[in-house]
Image (cartoon, rainbow, N blue to C red; front, side):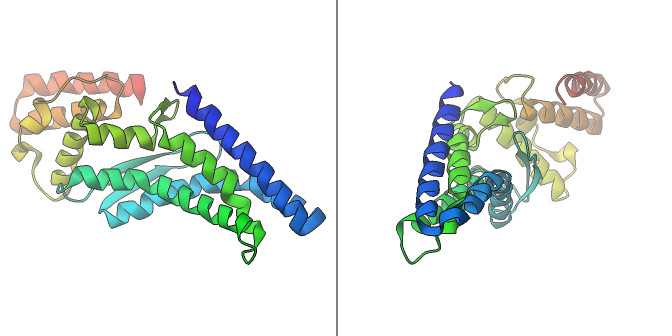
Length: 237
């Protein structure tokens, strides 16, 4: 249930915030109020760092990322691969990028609290980073979409949604490299499992099927998929 990671992440953030407060009060006295304010202000910045993590690891994996950042609400990140080789592992690493960055800042915060030589105020990002890490590491679906943990686990298991997603991304990568859509292997578009129509991968697949049939001169099927895509776009996008 998605309520479980929400509760766990909130408890983790609250506990770490209390820890930060006690240590900073001992270290800075009344100046610890400034640190407490920075802990609260760190939440939107940690969300931004999470999306930047996807972007950074996307660059390393040759996957273009288009983040949709929201200060209040769930941020997301669309992926567009460059090349279709080793796509599964590249997508997994890109999806894990946000988690890795949040974990890194959480570790820095713990070190700042535990090591006397480190500036204690560096713990400011600890509660927010821990919150986002726990929230996104759990395989779950929220109102903003799938968590990184669910995306990665689905890819590793090779479930139906992951298979369709990889097929869509493979086609998109080949088109981006200059391959005409009419020359795409038809099995990448039509020999796939059925998934829920509200999935982004299904909507993108429907659009690609329309473009493929149109390029092939198959007017009847092209018209069918065009109408279907317009219906999905109106309903879910």
